[in-house]
Length: 468
Image (cartoon, rainbow, N blue to C red; front, top):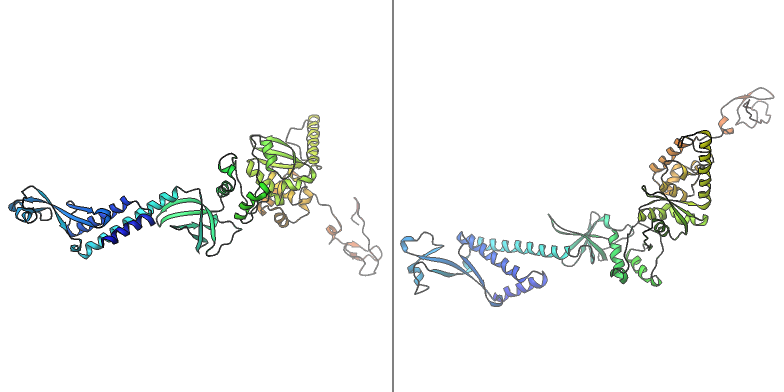
């Protein structure tokens, strides 16, 4: 029995990571609780463990009193009773009398067991919490155990990790037993016990992967300024023969990585962020509003904007600037328009902002109130001019550009507010109007090729004074 207790203590120390002192105190508290349940008090109980935990002894301390002064047999004893244990006992002395744990009734034993279990659960939870809290923000490897309500539960060895759907990559599919490397995003002692939240979607996860594979980042020789992620980002993989970034890309299920050099100068930083496009120059439009214009060659425009505007959107988020992208020709044309309008305003006394947009200036990106991000997304879909927008269905525009239907509707409203859209009348506009056949006088319409009465071929011409 004694060796069993010693072995149990050793297992708790090695397997649960609980300190020896905490284990001894917990067992002591359990025995004290059993004593109190049996005798109604714990004031006079003494618990002593033998060397190497080969056993435990329980004593009850009692004060020796005169027989006439005896009031509490649990705390006191008479001199006659005391002389049975110690011949030299005297009134006022305190004796420690051995208590056999087997004398405890069943209820006292159950209280001791319950106290022990609860204390060990609390200690184990606190120990694990302290251990994993210190690892928060670090990588950990576990194994897919089960799934419930789109939440994956991961076996981490000592505990179970929680991998919520919102922190999973949409590119990844898991099965029971799969190895999962994730970031310990949050550690909390909830109502249901210790909760270890895992993530593979946060930017910090990529940071830790970079530190793991690139020593220069780990030792701070290279400092990461900022990381932004999209479900399917497009970029260039870099590194010695691409090995470092390939390893990280594999861990991210093929997600590509682009390394952008940070620069304190926003112009240079925007140039770097728009790579792999070659940017000729960057103009700061309004520094307070963080709006900028990037000038690229014609062949670089689609690269700078990216598919559905993705490249420029990532650059916007990375630099915290609202970036518009134009070709050199577009920029020069805009510059000439601005200068001509300034001259016209000075000649005719038109206040700034009161003139309407010239018919020649029909680029969507030039319309007042147009978000550069919208214009860039539309340009990526080949919709640059107002005419391009009008020629296509709005649902098709939303699908091609990646804009929402609400954003496409806002673009249409901006167009209507700033320009007058006039549709030319053609033969279809005249369908339904009636005219007289030139031979027999029968009423005919422009959609008829021959007169239904005489069969003569019909031809309609239009001018400013007559309809047909």
